Image (cartoon, rainbow over all chains, first blue to last red; front, top):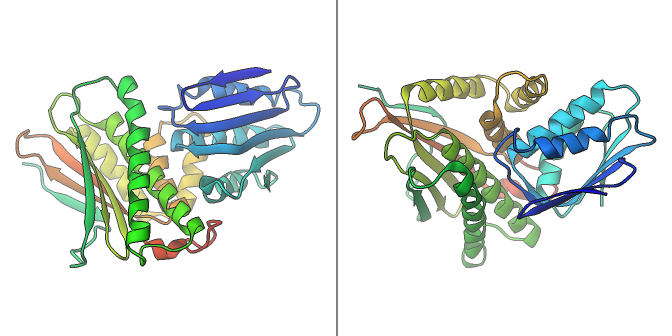
Length: 115
Length: 208
């Protein structure tokens, strides 16, 4: 299990590198500060044995720099062949319904599962 | 002498009774990394502040889901405004960074102001012209693709585009010459939310 933590957030990647969990509120200052998280996400795209799952249902807040980070990840997944990508979202977290649809426009095959 | 300029939609005086809250930050006292945390605290405060009026003023909003949508929209927009103001304000002059929340019975206005030099002012105006002349949704996708391709940094622009595209905010901009610091401008960016357009809690019902 690989974990990145900050004052208001926690990100965990399972040992099989296929699932990443996000929790809390992410408001880092820009792309450079998001790099460790971005690198962790990109690790899921290296020879995945199955679907890649990004679980956002406990991520209550994400600033636009974080949305940029997710967008870059989704575009990279789209541009690789054979990647099956799922996002787990929550109906009770406002930004999920408002902003995740943009990621689907970037990658129509992206599946968003609302819980 | 720098000419004052208004771009986009700024709201005329409606004559409606207005509640407001204004915060002001000195621009010189702490480095960006140490004051970044304050953006989130201040934005959360503004989001919470709005909820005070949910119960006091029945026509601002109604259901808990609707109230949650409005609270999040205010927090998100305030946070983005503060992040942009902290990143791009002119550090060499003592022009405060301000954020203001105004509530009437029918709308919520969040506005942020900061001082900029001529170069930053021109860059920002060029971006605003693009926003005003193109569809925000298309521009957002275009910017995200460009960002992924490693082209020029447009992070602050993405924040503004998500306000329009994802939260249905109407944006306006004012560029004014600063009386104490010739050659510098005070830029005010404002976002207007119409709570009545947030009736659909899953976000599908935001009007243009």
